[in-house]
Length: 404
Image 1 (cartoon, one colour):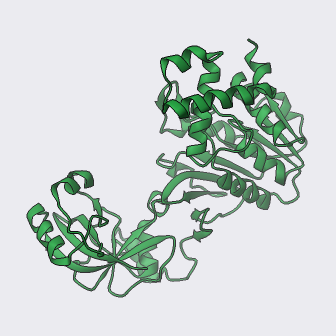
Image 2 (image 1 turned 60 degrees about the vertical axis):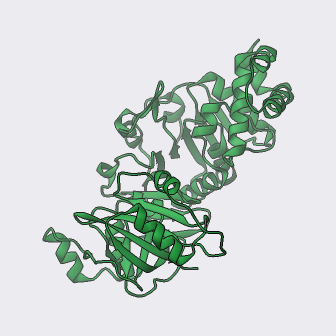
Image 3 (image 1 turned 45 degrees about the vertical axis):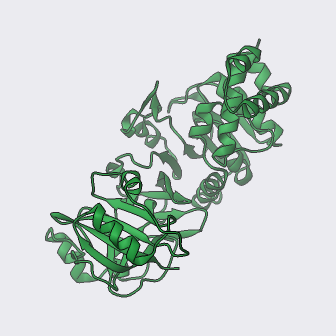
């Protein structure tokens, strides 16, 4: 079977759909389904397309391998990428994309730019993306099934363009954390002579070295997760953006970064103080994207919070902070020094908290699941939040009510 031509066409959609239905009916890939599939590639695409739907990335008529589904950008985030890049280069008509993948970023870029030239080294992935985009009605995009490099003639023949890149962060089956080992390496992308570009980076990767003049790093959140970081060239983007809630934060937005606090940082001191938790105070839990940005201390300072421990991202306010998608807030109704399962059980019984009670922890070596299975909960209509956290050289257990 000519898989390249097959996946660029339309017959594959029905074939994959039948295999998907069999997988869903059997609740997994059985030996019988594997034998009936016309090829291993069709089986992988059926499995991947189901995964894309579970991840909220599926689109009508779109196909994914399992790896494509895992690495594809969520459609809402892809739309944000494209709009942000267009704002950086409002007069630019052409964008060069490095690493097409499933084509979700390609599709979003095609809505903002007149011409999209996309490079995809994997021929099978490129064929699936071509089929996806053709069925989606995209006509202003060319996918080139070749590895991109900065000396490529397709790039050099363009008078001007802006760049979007989602370099591979895997080497065979190994997850790469060093941006210099991406494929292609970030340094090769930065060498491109264009005034505007965006490069997608891993959410947990160390990218501090790219915070230089002319560049900014934006951390992207979606739902409760940090999904990625973006290295932008050409503008100072918000430091944190929660795409689904449209919340943004950039240190200094509210002019609360006082001169004395900046002086503390220059002297090697902390800009926020360690505060002992007490009943009536409020625990602040930043969104995962705020934490991943590396600027939690600045964030706490802006909202007037101290910290429970200098090494963990739990803030503490004396009064209730304004509620925002960028952080959660919990009022403390009880405090215990250390961590005692017996004492936690006593507190649950006293507070009459049911099994919907949430358990959170930071800086403690046990898992929340371990603690959960040690406890029993009464049948009531009340639920709370139990927070186990490191507190300087010890631990503290906090019993809280979520602020709504």
